[in-house]
Length: 503
Ligand SMILES: [Zn+2]
Image (cartoon, rainbow, N blue to C red):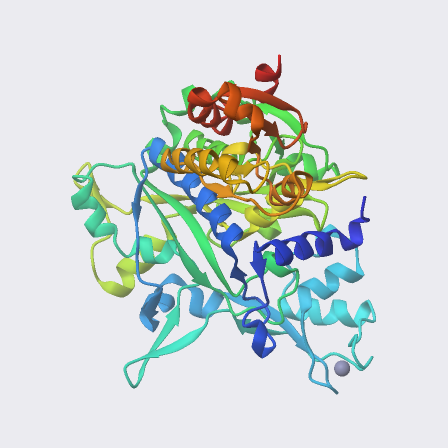
């Protein structure tokens, strides 16, 4: 097995070779870091993840919306992004190389209390730790703020920005939502769409992107409903892998499986509605193929939280490339956003409670799709002396079935083609491959994670059966041709296991 250091190389190499993702893009012009192209298999995989995400939200009563990705300056003044959405940077005094100050400090010190330092404190810390420019070893300048939004212009002279999150564009619709939801709260909406962050020299490939697809679910909710959230009853006995702030404070990094009702009792969560959002985020990530073995929910330390956040938890995924990767944030945004937009737009962003106007609170689940996509590739990669394969859960595999004629003879090609058409028409993503030895064709499908391969051979002509081969066990069973499509659907959905067919 490859060492931890170069595991990212293994994944990126496979991604490049087999068409999951390419970049940085545009490659033929040298590439700009933070931009990637999805190849055919990457796009299929992303579509699968998005469809899991979509159905999880819809099942939980969220409605999907879509807003523009460019908004005029006033929106970002109101949201606080123009003044507050900053990275702390330091520049080499000699060669002008730019560094993220917080990352530099983290790389040079293992002290977790160094999160959330002010600009001056960071400048001092860099001096104290004797950190210098890694390119020319000269001194680094004072730490300064850099705004992460990409600026553009509307028409000739109106300043505008590419959205750094979808959330703000969702909040602008609040008045419309009130009409749509007939003035009833809580109301839940979500958005899946592009967002942009002008990171300085982003590294870590697909994990740090300047353009990415964001998913953000929002619940508009009154304070009393946050405490009285009937759906919490349904999940109170569910155990989640939690790492609470209280536990971390004692210097402990150990995750424990905690019942949700227990977590509320212990004071890990103040509000049942917020706790339910943490559970929903967990469910969505389970749907995307992550398990308790490689996933944890970590509460932010006080100095990690945004100024408006009353509470914050992250979904983190363990990878072989980068260790624990933060993949999703669950935020209690209070009524900060709606209050600000009411102030700046002069439009009403409140509802009437006992005849008094009240600006509701917002609970949010926010993540990018590319991070779980990368983590899933990382977690799915397997290899032995013979082969390497991607053990995607079958429902998520980009290609679900491959059909092979044993040989390129017409008497095999014709029935294989018919089977291919039938499986494809039934709605499964199916590939037809007649090139090379059967062993090589299996290896090619293994490498992209295709869970099931169907081979049409000479016995098929005699007894109207075909061979179905399982990617993980490499075992094969013969299936009657008329039962093939239905069986494949059950296998791909996971309603039957291959082992039960093999008997
Ligand atoms: Zn330098």
